[in-house]
Image 1: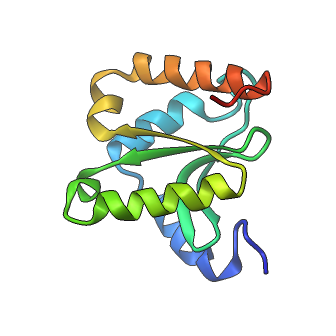
Image 2: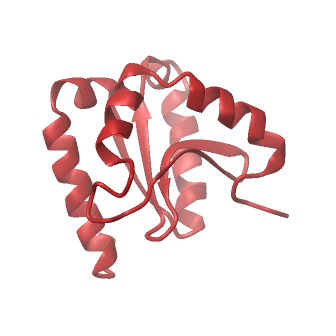
Length: 125
C-alpha cells in the first residue's frame, strides 16, 4: 500500500493547500523554493492516513503547525499517536504553535535551520 501522497487524499490535500491559515502561509513563504539550506519542502503532504503541514522528503522532516484545534480535549493524545506513527516511518517531527509563527518567525526559522543541520549530519536528536 502506498504511504506517501495517496490518491484518496488528493482532493483534501489540494483544498488544504488552497486554504492555508495565515501562520501556514507565513511559514510557507519562508521555507518554500529551497530557501532554507537548499532543502525542498512540500506543503500538505499525505503520509499514511495523515496530512502533514510541511514535509521534506530528502531529510524526512515533518513540520506541524498547531492551531486552536490542537488545544481541545483529546487533541494531545491524537497528536501523540500521529507523531509516533510518523516517527515509526523514520520521520523527524517538529511542532510550532500559530503563536510561535506569528510572534517569532525568526526563532522558528532558527529552530528549523538547526534541525536541518542535525538531520543532514545524521544526528536527529
